[in-house]
Length: 225
Image 1 (cartoon, rainbow, N blue to C red):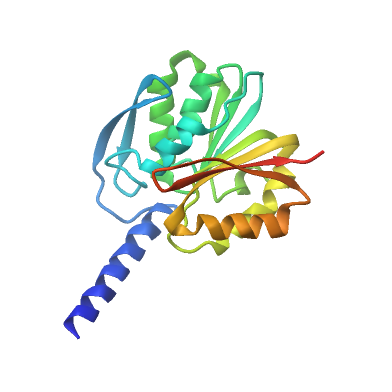
Image 2 (cartoon, rainbow, N blue to C red):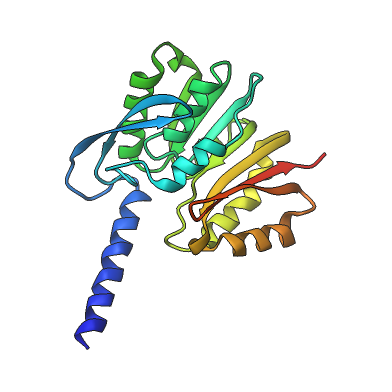
């Protein structure tokens, strides 16, 4: 009986912890951290804060994703969706300096970190990097913006349904032949997501797995002609 109570408490604590990341104003005490990380052969320093996902160190899924994501060589419009403290979008902006990069997150603390990290890591490129606060595509739904690439480490700990529904919106925000790349942990249902996408989106996207590494799958969905 006591063991079952411990499991329930652990589940409730995890659920509450995950809710902090996906809420607009996390209700946890503020503490700021500095996270150094070598990505794409460059050292980045990220300012992080409690109430933001993986605030003590860059999570493995994001690291695997960044090392394998496609970075455009030509001028593009790119989106880091659900950006957290901005690692994916900042690497995109650093490596594709000719591109315009948007970063969106609902969490106001995440957006604060992202803006600080853009100033620190991108210096003179900040005019091409745009941060917006809101839930997924809400901040741009009336702005007629379309992207060459959308990048994401989706929050799946509260279930896959929300992410799979989001996938239905992705084509409306992509340019012709635009790509949607994301990472999912195998234990969090990467194989299920692949089957679902193949069944429901094979007439819209060319679907590929870029890599499988350290228990993570990196997906590439490119709009068909």
